[in-house]
Image (tube, rainbow, N blue to C red; front, side):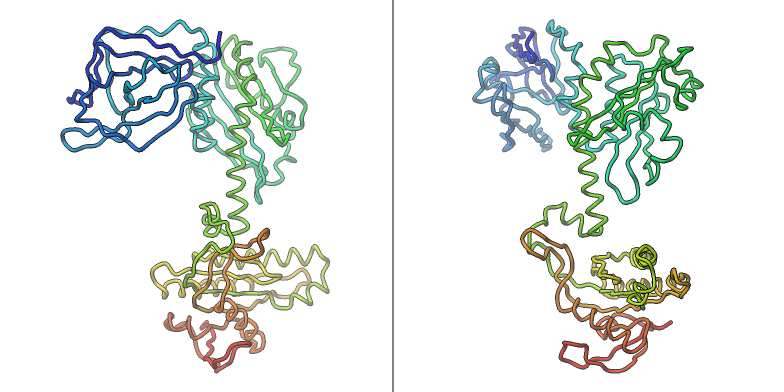
Length: 507
């Protein structure tokens, strides 16, 4: 039998299409087109449709079997317009010639009925390959891996597979975890999602599990849980026995890079899983893996961009601002902070000790900034550059930047370095216009802030050390603040022209 079948039948019985009480079409000359994957649709001849209700739509799609699809909207007498409620093939390919110029209606938008029930065509593949058909026609519509796995469980259950539990383990690049586990139980009918932290692969619970067994490329696992002499007896299997389960399967989901991810299924049916059911799932496991891989790659990309660029910059890049010069000029409070005495630390400490100290400092700085809604743009050696973009109120973001500075200065007081010395830092605050976007060479870009105000905050931070001040503020940010500063004198920042009053942050 052909893999894809399209059959068209005439319908002498009366067919009707309506929205509420409004009849859109009524005909005894309609045609029924049925397709192996997508099912059936009734096509009405245009002369049997109320032309005064039809509006041609600009929407076009393409079917490789039937040709270009034209869409129609419906304008109801009460003024309501139902967009793209129907479709037709005005220049049909051979397979659709019997419905050329006819219009079918979306059953989710228009009620279509006939005087008699319509028998399904005798197509054994419809039942046999319903799971494959679902993967081909609907699985890709799931917007997240959670939606996909829930839909997968529902589809397998509707096909008669006696699943009590499913677990999918997907490994990924992430700064804080090695992957994510998705677990579905039939009685809960919801998905539990758990991030696997770094080091989870060395934990006894995962080391001695079918998941790691399969991940390491050792094939799959099939074990009847009521077998008195089991080939496999992982601890999870006893837990499942205690819950009344009878059969267990773990199979690899192989991604295009050759990495192994894992899907496990558990049944509580007396007979367990059938060979036909498991065979169908196994033969389609490559397709499932590819769809999941798309989700994993998308989430990994978004996670890494957020980690390396920050949430605001990452969202802009993901939205398409990825070309050199993309971005705009914004007003922002700008914070620049660095670690005091880092040169001496690097000389006195081992490389590991120095990096540990530096990362503890960065933890404090980043937490202090993000708590107040700022975004870290860049780590420059032992320094941090961050901005608080003006949204509506310059005073508000400037106040938040000042609060972040206090968070940082208080936080470092509680930290000792690897050599036992107290940690200390300096913070500079400024306000002005910055060019926020993509800068760099053609093949190596950075999404950051640049411009005069960024240069000035860097010079202000140098002045902190010269004046032995923990935190200095420019006159432009002080203009946005009340009662959070006192003057420390007039200075001309290095490389700038004018003399300006500089302030220290009040305790």
